[in-house]
Image (tube, rainbow, N blue to C red; front, side, top):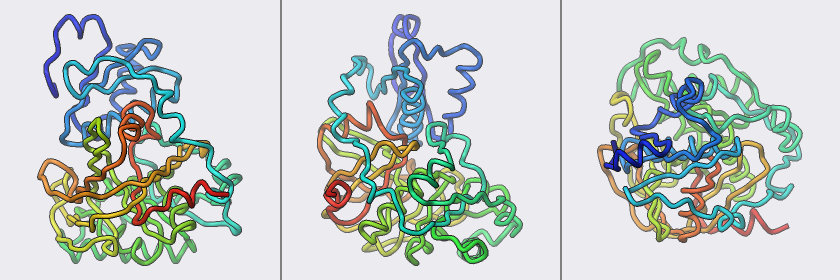
Length: 347
């Protein structure tokens, strides 16, 4: 358990200990097995390690999409359900200029979305109608047919080159990849590929997370900036948020080093450090009906072994922390350099 609560509390409530990332699909199993009833409130116990909180954010979003009630517990006394209406002003209907593209944009989805993205499913027809973006499903074996590659940078570069071929073959304007399956098929990661494609001006995301790719497309359209796709790994009440992921566009960093991927312990990942200063946190909802775009400050970067390798602390406001802990637009959020929130809201 992340921390200890009384036996009585567990007996009287629906309590789920979310111990690590990748466990979101197991929550659906609990529903199917009738061990969790979404008609009753659910407490999600989390820690600040091993992507526990990011998984809980995805589960929380899944529950809210089904009109359920859930509470993320970060300590034993964190049991009061807050008023989510306090955060309603943060997420608004996106303007047409945010969504609509003048020409059809072709976006590749290499492999199905990762199994744990339970709150991040999209309707392809809605994406085409609202954003003029055509989502193109690409069999994962077009990438995995590389087979086992070198475990170091040479292999990571081979994955990048194959993805470049896919971008060219399908005439893609953006791409997202079911990258975790590379661990077993190619014995390396897609972290270098995602980083390099972003630096080349091709929005690229991980885990075949389509809402993230659509957010990256909107960010590029309005600001020209590449985005860092981060897991909110730690959140404090005063607005401090730690974003973590194993890849980042090197053009966003002031220094970086290569290391092993966090979850798998293999291949090549990136520990990047970005300059302190002005940034914007952005996310489109999976149904394209809500948008978060808030100006924040990057205060520092860190490195801990029990988190994804690029770790960025941002300072926002207490209301943004409350949004993430009570009514998030799923887990992954995008960080771009500069204060650009007004560009997303000004007609």
